[in-house]
Length: 126
Image 1 (cartoon, rainbow, N blue to C red):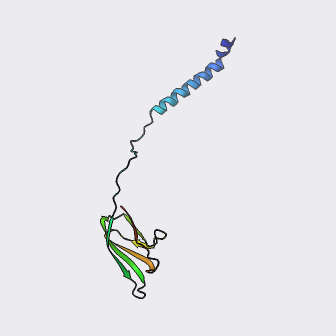
Image 2: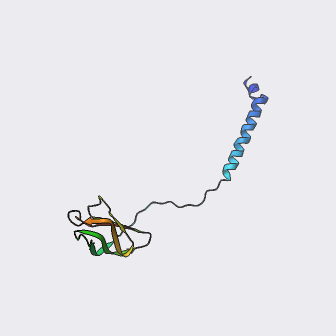
């Protein structure tokens, strides 16, 4: 009796439709292509920069403030690289800096040379 129920025309038609859909999906999936790509993980040495010849350009009206800082950096930072400076340990980054072997960092407003200049921190990246 159970075998007769499985052989009914409706069940056979449903099984045939299911089989066609399954085979079609498998054939479609087999035609997918994935472009070649790269991925990876690793480590390498990060070498630092050498900063020298630091020069503070004092403001002509108030020499207790500086308008800019100029310094040499080795190796030179190429165009498209980034240079930032801070005088308070990285709390603020008040200047716009260029790239190259001699870096000029200009302040939007003159910076007080007093207690605010506790250190010169230079961050550079190619």
